[in-house]
Image (cartoon, rainbow, N blue to C red; front, side):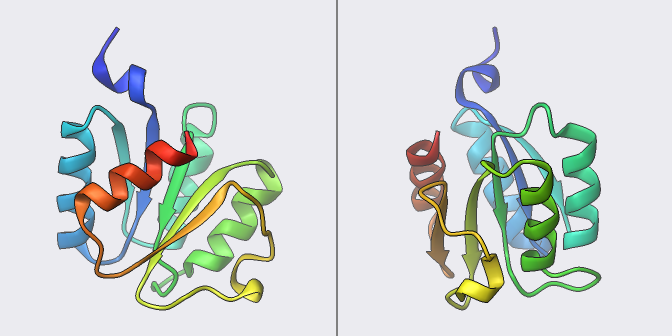
Length: 124
């Protein structure tokens, strides 16, 4: 059994490559398996390919091609109880998420890698 299988599988969706890469490296160091995507459309595709493995989705809201809120609406239709961390420079509104539950949390940018790992662990 690998360290990743003990911690969980995370889908990280952010259009800022530096943030995505840094957080991916840190989360992998912390024992998570991380799948990345650069926008909501790619994130949705990656989720559809890996829906049986993904335990937490981390997403920015403002992205090209498909924003994070649109992507989350699609993901929640497939998996209503999906655990989500909205990691954005702005606070999401109820209209952004359209789903309010204990399985959704928010991180305000800028956040530290440690804060992100703790948020993921809290959801798992």
